[in-house]
Image (cartoon, rainbow, N blue to C red; front, side, top):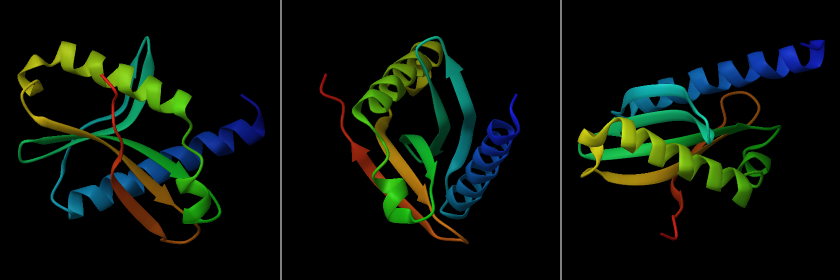
Length: 121
């Protein structure tokens, strides 16, 4: 692994840890972090009551930059990974579900965008 990519990897892990802590403070229970499937990865899967949130974490210099970097292609991979999760854990099939984005900027700037996008199926 190159030095730059190792630093990016560590920054990603730290960002996801901050996001998970933020979610726990908001009353969510973390079900999975870095949920990997053959079709995609989900940074955080969290539950609060009868809601399952599939959460993408993005860190950039500013929260605004982080909010703008989620592409339709990334959304599709996350949706497919969520379908995989539900196939593996069918007990969650009747829960409400949504796709969230957690945008992190410098310092402790965090924005949790509930229901950041919808599936079209």
